[in-house]
Image (cartoon, rainbow, N blue to C red; front, top):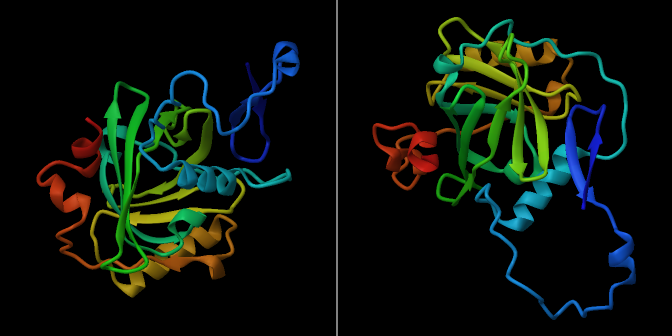
Length: 239
């Protein structure tokens, strides 16, 4: 069966396996033999190794107390949907060398957010990597607190810390102050504007010496965003 663990470290819940009395007494089956059907494909669309790496990175080890992280007072979900260019981040391990990073959202119902994150690995001509997590809006008063599910049993904390009135810029943060994403609607922004957005992240309590500016260069003919045409990346890849 499964047991659920509730964390106080920013990631709200995940599941692990519970060894039953029956399984402890079951006969040994060698690892190279498979009994029954092949395991189901990961619904996130990510390779198992990439999923595991991201899961362990977001989960972290050990617990500590962190001050609350302020979020946007109210997020208009309809206006927040669509494509966002990642301008800077304190990256998870899977995206440490990302180029042309784009995160895109499409609302499904009133709480579910279909998400696509696409980037090139290692350079502007690098291999395209695509992640397809699914968000769930947890706090319905502000719509600023989400759980982002990268794997079927694990939901990572995802906080909309900032969104301007025009919905042209946003910052996604976490209570642990471990990872952060600075995003804008435009692919290219000035150094001055980037510095202002980085200052907002610092004000949240982050160590901005860890912040990496994510290179953006467009057009990019081989990028999934280009293939999406007039639709958003999430609309094109998740519906």
